[in-house]
Length: 124
Image 1 (cartoon, one colour):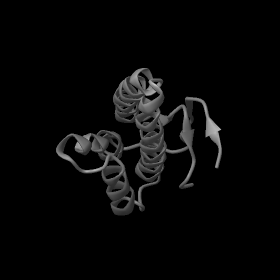
Image 2: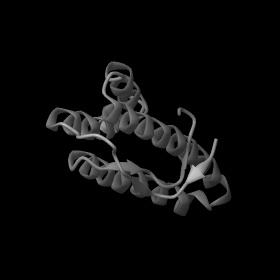
Image 3: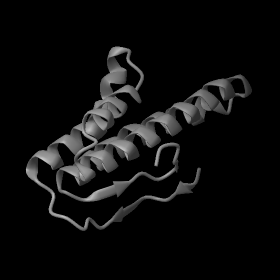
């Protein structure tokens, strides 16, 4: 497991419009958390359903890794509320998660491979 900074890495193949849309949906599917479903479920489903498309598969795995990482960061920040540090850390984690999911979806919709910052690579 490694943590990497945000980066865009080049694709070596042409990305179709359908692949770009599915990749963007892979990132945006994390927002199902707003209806009570954990944020990592959406990217996991997208990855499992689109393993035949290399662009969508990679973007869905990146989204899954990012959401697993941020669930862990959120849990730590929530527990840190006891020490009062979490009162600042938890909102920062949530806003960072929201902004980076939107950024990744926009990059994927443009056909760019995007790697989230602050992400532990659980799935490779």
